[in-house]
Image (tube, rainbow, N blue to C red; front, side, top):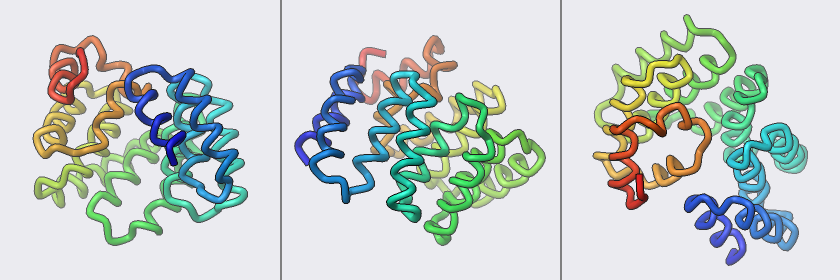
Length: 199
C-alpha cells in the first residue's frame, strides 16, 4: 500500500515518472488488487502514453473483468486515442456496478460524448442536470461531458460547483489530461489554488 499511496501523491503533484515507478512496484507486489493496475493505466495516461495506458487497463480487465475502477480508467484513457467504443463499453459496465448512484446518467453522458453520440449524450446530460440536487459527483461528470463538447464555460461552472462542495478527488485536476484545455483559464487556475496547488 505504501508504494501505491506514494504513487498517487507523486502523480497529483506532477511527478508522474516517479509515480509510475512506485505504482508498478505496488502492482507487482500485490497483483490481486485491481486498483493498483487501474492506477498504472491512469499514470501512463497522465504521462500522455495513452496507448500504453489502455493496454495496461485492458490487461487488468482480463484478470478482473468486473472491477469498477479499471472500467473507470478505461473510460478516461480511451478518448485520447479515439476509442469511443471502449469508453462506451466501460461506461455501460460502470453504470451496472453503480446502478443506484445519482451520477450514473452523468457518467454515461461522458462516454456517449466520447463515442460521438451527441444526441444521446445531451439527453442524459439534461437528465443528470434535472437530478443534480447539489451532488458533487454529478457536477464533476457534467464538467467532463461539457469539456468533451468543447463547452469550456459550462465545464468551469460545474467544476466550481464540485469545488464548492469539496469533492475530494478534484485534486486530480492538477494532472489529469482531460482538463488540459482549461489550464490557461483564470477560473480553472482559481480552482487549483483553492485545492492548494500553484494554479
